[in-house]
Length: 387
Image (cartoon, rainbow, N blue to C red; front, side, top):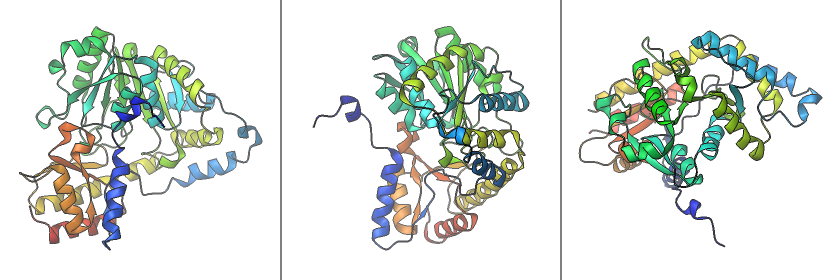
């Protein structure tokens, strides 16, 4: 059997490899505490669950759903953007539903990237930016995220030829895996860069609701000129603990939304309407559960930072996301450090190199684990591990 060459160029999916390593250690009798994948541990708010239960019983919802999402859901997203960011969106032309933001991010490359085209993607970054480029026949051009630049790409250092051939740029703030945030001035530079070159600027905003210490991450669409080139991917997975529900949206430039819809109508059939109605309840209902999650993650963040500092690691509290991005001790690679930590303490973290070459020298801890288990994991690290 011969598989397509595009498959041969795709590296193993990061978290599949993490699960394999975890299983190996568990087989040796080690009780593993995984701080790997970022999957919220808290339940979906009750009013959202009850809405789904009621809407699932409506016979009309059992038919094929609308490809672009129900009008009610698209209107709810537009209303959320108006209230939250002061951004006006046309729900008919500038909003489309997604079956999780990962689906939309993967598909957008098919809408804009032809074989040989370039994409500008962050390194370290969500692995789908790179694989989505490869599936479309494009060439990923990496933009390193360095601590000295606030983990924002140095746009002045982008190779001019790659920029000329680029069709898409991806940003992601609050950032996975670094936890960095991006202010209006930084986002404005990206918008201007893309407008000058006719590049579609995609913003993965999955962690938009999770910022701390008084900081508020702006939406890309608040930035002047962003509607000319911008497309923002939002998700209900993280703020409402709905990862398994697979409901998200893309908003922004009408032509970009239209192009994405063409791909979607040929490759999927839209999300179950009952889930979309539950998503409306999430967006239009009380936002106290989101504030509660924000406070919980801040508490967990501070717990982790304190423990890492006790073992001699110099790490600053991240301003966003629900991850801690920490440097490995000098003289070790991120994989060596993560392996040693797993074998000596039973605590699983993600080596930074798994997110790209520029992630080498760091590791990522996810805060999406019960606080008592997180405290136990950090106690193990403090007790058994010294830098």
